[in-house]
Amino acid sequence: MESRKPTSPLPKTEQLFLSARKGWTPPPRISVPDWADKVRKLAKEAGSASGDWNTGTVEVARGPMLAVTEPGVHIITAMVSTQLLKTALLENVFGFHAHLDPCPMLLIQPKEAAAEQFSRERITPMVRATPKLRALVGSSKTRKGDESLLYKSFPGGFLALAGAGSPDNLARRPIRVLLCDEVDKYPVTREGDPIMLAEERTASFALNWLSLRVCSPTVEDESRIEASYKESDQRRASIACPDCSHRQFLDFFKHVDWEKDGGTHRPETARIYCEACRHGWSEGERLKALATIRHHQTRPFTCCGEYQMPLEAYERAGARRRSRTRTAFCSPHPRRPIRSMPSGTGGPARAGRSTGPSAATAAAGRCRTSTRASRLASSTPPGRRTGRPTSPRSGWPRRATKTAS
Image (cartoon, rainbow, N blue to C red; front, side, top):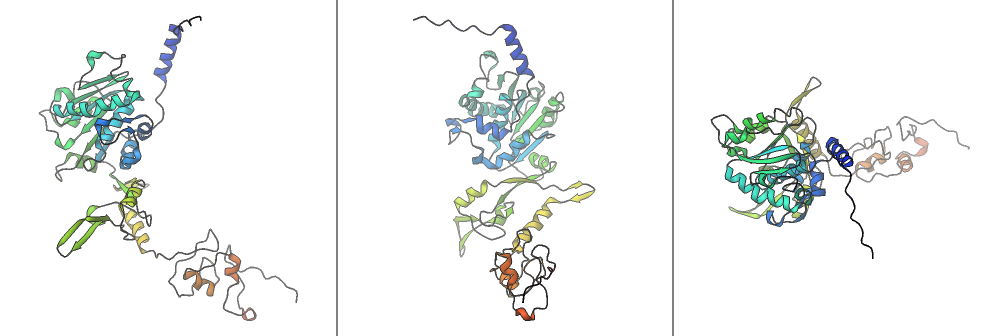
């Protein structure tokens, strides 16, 4: 058998053309959570789970990750509790830019030892477990001598890690993406605030620079992350009740309760209770409700000459929902919902002029779904009827039609 000849490589002109086209091609229009769901893999040593990444397991992180590619956003502040989303957010932002939008990045930890630990326990396993990143970070396209715990290079950019206590490392190089972890633990250096020093290095990227700050709040009125959050639009996550679908901003002291036997507390019976229907969520309902998380702006603002207060609007909407009765009504016409009325009254059953027992039965929850049946129902005998039947669409009296005697 004849051996096949090895295929010849592309001519240099075609290679040059492909390289130029690749360099001028803009990054694909994909969000950070979509990239993570399609590309990222979880390392076994980095957590309890391994395999494909699924943003649905950390649904609360979807909002901050979507803000990374939101036009006009330069500073993202994530003030969250511990072991919730901070590390996953930093990792996904690094992986997204290293793969699709390479640029110089800087990740700051409170101390240099913490930066080395983060690189060893988070960045390195993530790169090794994700094939797309493994082919770029530390590949043959980069110099092996440049690779270290505090410096990861890839085609088109790099990730440098530094401690917040070293002003020289913060101001050494120009960067486009700044990742700040545990900002409340940063010391104040002799040259000023570490975050401000690092953000000055983004001056050469005036249009697309990004600063990401994540931390759990510490001392009130002294916390860096709290001050940064107050300067933002103050987005908060709402969640829908699995029983009544009412949206609410969860608060531990407002929504969590447990059984008490006299002076003995039973924390194992703790549940989340909806503020509208007071339904206690089971564990399955709680996990189902997490998939409904949405982020809303809560900071007051001025729009079109009017002062808007989003939180008051949310409270008014919640009060209206809590005041509704749980009696179900149906309307004879799909575009004209019937008016909610107390049981036993004979008021109008819909936005028309017809009255009688049909209105009472509708208020009692037994309204007929047929338009003709609800129109013909009346307590007055046909010979004594004083008013004319109304049109089911407009509510005005219909024209009388002659009938044969």
